[in-house]
Image 1 (cartoon, rainbow, N blue to C red):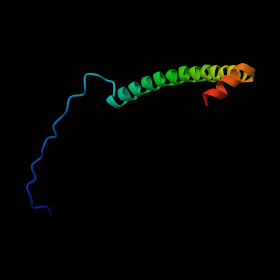
Image 2: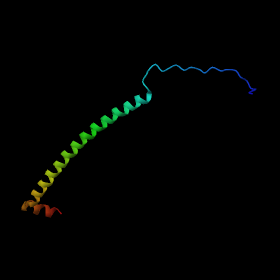
Image 3: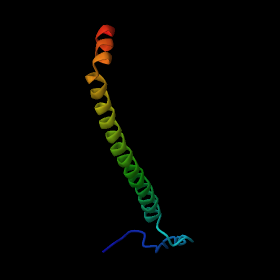
Image 4: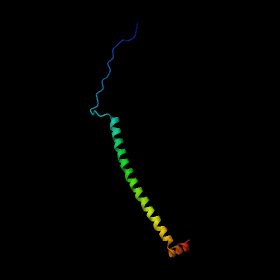
Length: 80
């Protein structure tokens, strides 16, 4: 048999939080919102990169046209 102190103890009841929303879900919601913003920024950056690639292609074409011109080619050769 048990020969110790057998006093019954009450456990303290904690109040439920007033906001029924779990803080973990709140944080996850904020993270998802930020991810959506990042995704939209990435889409914009991809569009900008495609525009830049097109611009570089045009510039390369213009440079090759300039180099084909005999007078400009001579002047460029003198600079180097």
